[in-house]
Amino acid sequence: MIKILCVDDDAISLMICKTAIKNAGLSEEVITASNGEDAIEYYANFTKNLESDSNDIYPRLIFLDLNMPIIDGWEFLDDFMNLYYEKFKDTKVVILSSSVDPQDKERAKKYPIVIDFYSKPISQKILKEIQVKLNQNNFL
Image (cartoon, rainbow, N blue to C red; front, top):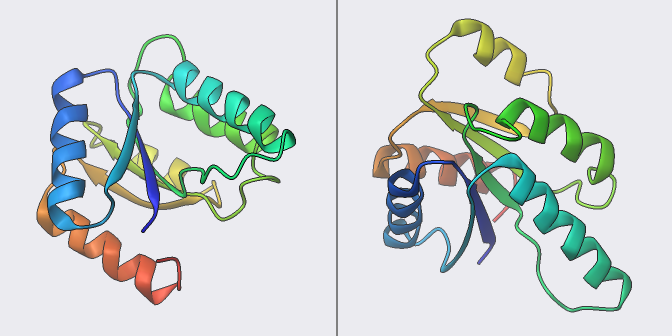
């Protein structure tokens, strides 16, 4: 079972995402961050622990909102790609956003770690689609 990170500035969306993931059986370990800065900080701390021979398992799937304060989803993706992609190449991102802008969907395709783009709220149907995609790519 994989560890999942949910990044969203809305506490209710985080709670719904966490509950839905657990109910779908996708993961029992769901970590949350309230903005991109917190998520990048999580990976910075995790990287430090890796260097001290930690056996921790890092999140291999990230559910990411785009519209957040401090560091938004796009900035998170840029920072992750520049700082952590080499260490965590098997990490995948699913954008889960309120944005319905087709340009956002096109922009997301430019990031090799982004595997899908969905509109909020998360649902069991969305989670099943993601699970199928991850299984097809031998990710789970």
